[in-house]
Amino acid sequence: MPSERLVEENTKRRKIFQAALFALTLGMLVYFCVSGNNLAVLIQSLPNISLFWMLCAAASVFLNWMMDSLIIHTLIFHTSGGRYGFGSAFRVTMVGQYFNSITPYALAGQPMQFLALTGQGISTGVAVSTLVKKFLAYQTSLTVYSLLVILVKYKFFQSRIQGFMALAFVGFLYQAALVVALVLFSYSPGFTTKLIRGAVWVLTRVHLVKKPRETGEKVKGQLEFFLENNRALQGKRSLGVKIYGFTVIQLTALFLVPFFIYKAFHNPGAPVVDMISAQSFVTMISGYTPLPGAAGAAEGSFLVIFQMFFAPGIIQQAMLLWRLLAYYSCIVVGAFFAVPERRRAGMKSARAANAAEPPVREAGQAANSGGIKHE
Image 1 (cartoon, helix red, strand yellow):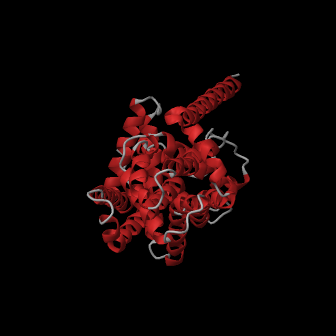
Image 2 (tube, one colour):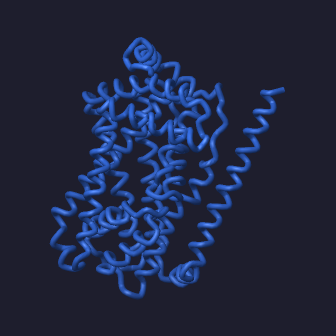
Image 3 (cartoon, one colour):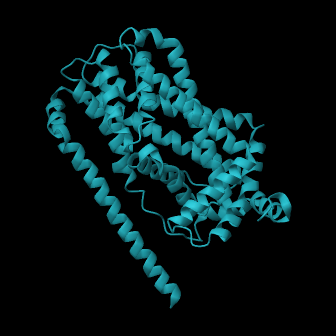
């Protein structure tokens, strides 16, 4: 029967995709271990490392994931007014962590999170709205965080890293430009519509969308809900405080990882604020590198900036531990969540979320009645 054949084809594709992800994950781990004799360097550093502080560093990475999941959970729960499990939100987070880590500029993270959300039964309007709001909060928080660090710690770093601060300013401008683009996407219907048309055209060209007109109509039908949802949340100050609060905690947790590694090597204690600031500079500088995981730029900027804190004999080991915890852990753990879920109409969280989502239907009706013109 056609339905059975379709199920078999989907199962086969899932298995191929899963095997490809496993091979890619294993290959990146092997590369990390072999490149520059990294594994031997890490093994050499083990006797000198405090297990307690390394557990703190690992916990900090995990807290980063948990805050990201909490943001997704809060936004979807608030938007739909129904139930949405935290476990489902954590899965979406790890899908994003994985594909952000393996693609240049982290380009595949949000599209794959979108697929994960819709696979859980979340409507396209809620999924897009959630991801855009989350990314806007992240980029805005990172930009403000970076600006404060530049204003407060500029002289401190400029006196120790001659000429290197220019790269930090370029990174800051890059982050700020992303925020402007996201604001236009969120609050400009014309810009959003053109962007959606362009995305559908690209997906059609690469044969990921078979019915471009029908797909475009469906997406535009959700656009009105997306825009109305953005307007409705402008007055929700308590929700905004929560989202931005979670995001600041998320960023701070990630920026604390080098400090805990510093303590793991039994260092007496550089000011934690200085090390958080240093890591924010590393994030700014490596953010515009067009390689998966900002390869090269992340390691290089860490070695240059953190040489102020680590002794020459251990900074290489510290960099590898930081990279292993903050980057490769996202690949290893995320690989277990990266395979798409089977669409299940009976999923409790999806049923509850969509059952309590009358605005989506209203948005679709508004679109079909002239809210958005269909060409």
